[in-house]
Image 1 (cartoon, rainbow, N blue to C red):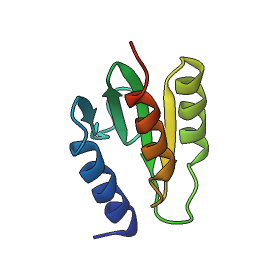
Image 2 (cartoon, rainbow, N blue to C red):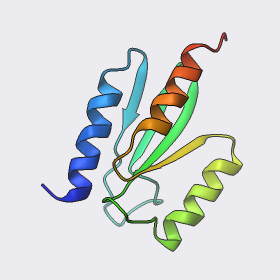
Image 3 (cartoon, rainbow, N blue to C red):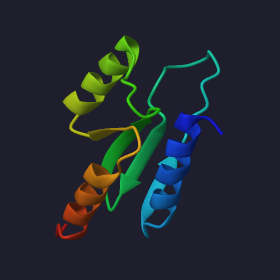
Length: 98
């Protein structure tokens, strides 16, 4: 498994553990519009995740996609192995009354 693959495996395991979480991993095929690795929703809150190998950064194209998603009001996480920011956000959403 690649270093990025190991990060994706940890992310998927965490997302699967969340009751009420939907996520999809769109497959890039050259057709349609590019997006990030994960398109997710948890308890009515949209969020996206870009997984990277440890120490790697999003590409310039991914940075544009991230800015556009954030401009829409959705949360974006760039994860290179440390899930603590995502875990803290999930805890915050759990405590939010809707």
